[in-house]
Amino acid sequence: MLGALALLTTALLGHAWPTPPYSPPGGVGVSPDSPPPVYEPYSEFDFQSLNLALNQEWIELDLFYRGLEMFTLQDFLDVGLNSEDRELIEFMAQQERGHAQLITDMLGPNAAKECNYTYPFTTVPEYVDFCQKLTRFGESGVYGFLPHLNSRPSAQLLLQSITTEARQQMIFRQFEGLFPMPVWFESAITQSMAWTLLAPYLASCPSENPRIEWQNFPALNITDNPVGYDPAYPPAITHNRTALSYPGRQVTFVWEEPGKKVGPNDLYTTSSDAGAPKFAAWISQLNTTYTPLYNISGQSAYTYQPNGSVFDIEGYYDPIVNDTMFILITDSDLHVTPYNLSLLNEHVVAGPAMYQSG
Ligand SMILES: *[C@@H]1O[C@H](CO)[C@@H](O)[C@H](O)[C@H]1NC(C)=O
Ligand SMILES: *[C@@H]1O[C@H](CO)[C@@H](O)[C@H](O)[C@H]1NC(C)=O
Ligand SMILES: *[C@@H]1O[C@H](CO)[C@@H](O)[C@H](O)[C@H]1NC(C)=O
Ligand SMILES: *[C@@H]1O[C@H](CO)[C@@H](O)[C@H](O)[C@H]1NC(C)=O
Ligand SMILES: *[C@@H]1O[C@H](CO)[C@@H](O)[C@H](O)[C@H]1NC(C)=O
Ligand SMILES: *[C@@H]1O[C@H](CO)[C@@H](O)[C@H](O)[C@H]1NC(C)=O
Ligand SMILES: *[C@@H]1O[C@H](CO)[C@@H](O)[C@H](O)[C@H]1NC(C)=O
Ligand SMILES: *[C@@H]1O[C@H](CO)[C@@H](O)[C@H](O)[C@H]1NC(C)=O
Image: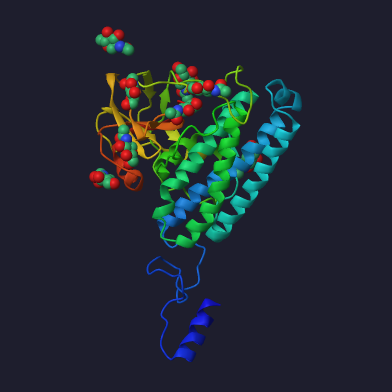
């Protein structure tokens, strides 16, 4: 339409009009001369990022239905959730059908199929907490690679599905009685960090599924993680809750050595390229913050929760740590920002684990 207008104007006025009106120079893929978008991976990096994302969508589809099958309406009523909440979870499962279809269409005939899964919950609160955490690392895992994809058209479509997943994450927080969004910015993590968190729940996959070519880091466990679920805070749009932890809180870790078989059919092996453990890396909001490890003994140590803010603007203070966020054990306090976070991968000794600070 605007292109036709430009041609017409050129014909009438006799001079070239190089760009449509209201088109500041710059941008990618916005010129009338741009090739039509192709919604497919342009590189192996794209394929593997989408492959990981598809495996995440498949487990969400299975997980949302699983809770509805495992627990009765009465189980939900007992913790303050009702049949309409169950309907909402079922709707989320349907959204996952769409998300899985979208990525399958982009990946073509080699796209991964659904797997068999193993889950750590036996009660409704544990289920809701698991959903809240799984959607958190699913969401953050995609934010970490979206701007790095070669295929911007694929990034566009994935963006439009991950924003829906972000809403699911917040709803599960509300179902858990947590503060719905205790941060100003959602965190991003790398594909290998997301795959490390996802792999333990994949029991077996169809043999033709493409291998997931990201690293599995050794598992990390926070042995004194705050518990989000508290019967004093039933499901609600929001509660005036305070944070579940505080700067200076001691946080204790145990982690595994590399070389453990993980993932579907134990086909993957954990590894680390890092040297000796020295720091806890706290990935939250826009920041990766390091605190020293103390009493490092074999695969255990402790640290203290850092203080500090993302922003402190005219007294409005956004603490870096105040959400379901990510901690890793590293050999270095390498300065990284969200766009170059993947440079941290080679310094990871173990993790991430998810810390429930808000
Ligand atoms: C899932 O588990 C069932 C029952 O053990 C088995 O028959 C099926 O082949 C498995 N599917 C996959 C994709 O591993
Ligand atoms: C982590 O540590 C806690 C406390 O020791 C323990 O209850 C839990 O089973 C551990 N989790 C894993 C995945 O090892
Ligand atoms: C919520 O907490 C803030 C301080 O954290 C307090 O000033 C406010 O009065 C509380 N509001 C309600 C409705 O409890
Ligand atoms: C750390 O190690 C020191 C010396 O072995 C010991 O006294 C202290 O209790 C340990 N601290 C913790 C929190 O384990
Ligand atoms: C954390 O930082 C804030 C803002 O600078 C400050 O008010 C608070 O006292 C600090 N807390 C700790 C435990 O250092
Ligand atoms: C966190 O990141 C923001 C944005 O880059 C920066 O302004 C702030 O200083 C960082 N905070 C800390 C504690 O590093
Ligand atoms: C990551 O990017 C920041 C700028 O955003 C830069 O200061 C830092 O040195 C980079 N980290 C590495 C390891 O290159
Ligand atoms: C931290 O999170 C709590 C909920 O866990 C929230 O009530 C509080 O407002 C948050 N604090 C800040 C300074 O954003």
